[in-house]
Length: 200
Image 1 (cartoon, one colour):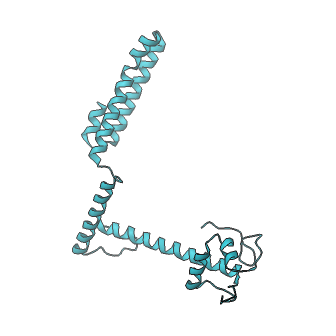
Image 2 (tube, rainbow, N blue to C red):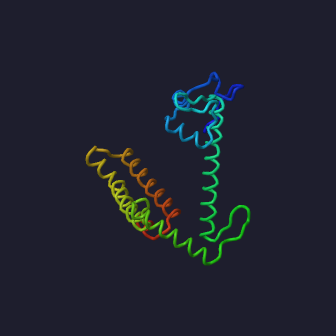
Image 3 (cartoon, one colour):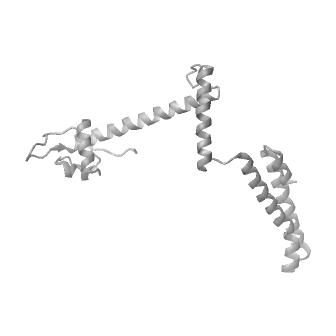
């Protein structure tokens, strides 16, 4: 939640405090009435408890503070969960967390590895991940296509546009520079021979 200016009553600036019924509180907090009812069971503060023929009454500022604290607690819980996920992933690959705690036992690490492998397989089947070899093949095809187009560009410019002399020489120079730069970049980033072959 982003920060916002608040008044002395804890509400956002310009918002006057008031005593509200359930429906009014739901509208004020942009929540549904069933949510407000559920929150009452979780500790949402009220002034007057609703009974047959008598509506609940809520102090807006108290309920606003309660909701904000609830959201902050949820955000803190999410952050703690993400920290645990990072620590588990570090343990999986043999690392340690920032506090310097030791790793897991071989049995625990093996169990984590199996769980990670199962997760990765499921993600692959869903299409959330792409096999490296498949990506290499796609990139190789793309680079070969681009190389062929760039290589043939001067001939096409000469044949179809009647380009000759210095303008044509400039096109050839730019083509050669582009191919050389692409080849150097690929050779610097390549992790497999397929990339290098595509650039040659």
